Length: 410
Image (tube, rainbow, N blue to C red; front, side, top):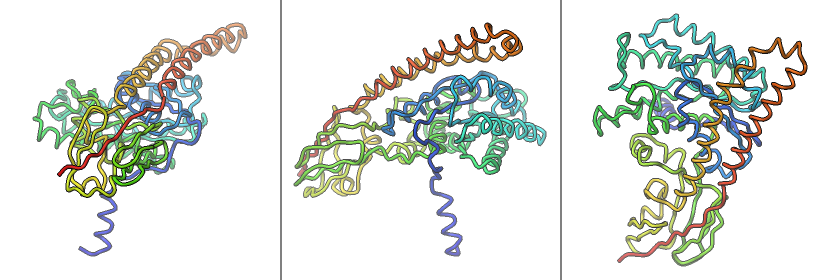
């Protein structure tokens, strides 16, 4: 192979991260259909943005709506987003837009028409940073529709993914290839764990936590996160040190650490899928390096777990988040995720039952200032409740104290 072609191939094989889409005080709207309304990948995104970046200035709001298409969202966009006034948005449509049939060019043309309108309107309402996400994938075992096989519908979704990529280039937005993230993990996972192992959910469309982690990964990369949670260096003969976000003391094999940036907590279901994707490598790197280790092996104790590693592994660096199934961050992360879940659970009825219906009274509000004031008061009351839940979630972001101990083995 010509060196130029080899270099190009290597570049294409590397993970692609967008420039950061999260300037200071970002307000992130997570937008999509019923898969978004499941509030799983949206929870993963929000907890990651709060816990893993060390930033407390980011706020999120999920706008998922079951059964929705790009056309449907385009009709409620201005009204519904106005309550939150986002500066950043992620979109995830296409699953319903594909109509659950084999691909036809008319489907792609219709999807492009409405997604173009969505992106246009997002920019018009002041969303400066957009991640245009593709649809995901259906499960190759559990998707059962009379009108299309799983392979046929994944082909349809791949075409719609290409539409999103094209529009992202046209509108100069970031792009998240949710479809590829799921497809690339699904095949190897089923090959090892069996065809019945679902990545796209037991209904074939709505994933469990494992599939949602893959979706979140695509969006987090689209948002420009580099995945470097922290780096801790333990010196067997001197002082331990840490990167930004980690205050470290201790020496000669021990590190006492206070961390304001947390590794992402992986539940048993999500941890299993990381064997078949690069979530830990690309987005969840909490690296331990050991200097001046004379022995060929050492045991590392972190929290309640102890594991053995070779000198070569420890000198190069191990990813604690991947190697250890339990960590001192688990309990605080679960508390944070629970608070985020409570907030997002409130956001769904707030939008679907109340805010979206205010547009039906636009003429009444225009003609009756008192009525308009009443609607605005309701909006402010609901937003105050959402903001209180957001404050409660942010309050869970406290530095975590933990210890890493390295002991030489003969």
